[in-house]
Length: 146
Image (cartoon, rainbow, N blue to C red; front, side, top):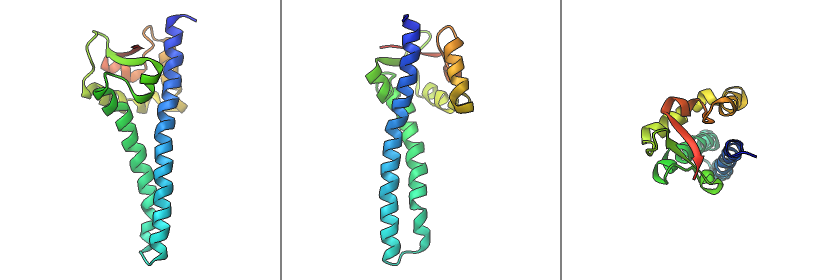
């Protein structure tokens, strides 16, 4: 397998691993929130407390994604938690380290890459010369082997 295909495969695996990490944290926190809400209702708290698990689910999912896709790469040399394990990192095309703004824009543009069950991102990674998704093209970043 050539180097380009290896990076593409690693990117797909990396994405699944990053999402699995966030989902484990989200489900764990949501279950904890559900148990806490149920206990509070049992001792007389208003029924609105039962919204706690939903609020936790949304908050942890959103916060975890921003943490994993924006903050960690910005602070850890361009790699999400799974990218570190897979030997990948994000760099600008000119070789410089991406800015916090670059990471944020990449993350926001995942709304485009994630369309049709991530088909847009998958196709772009497969057909672009540098294996870039839409967020990478806009921010002039590329995922490379570390």
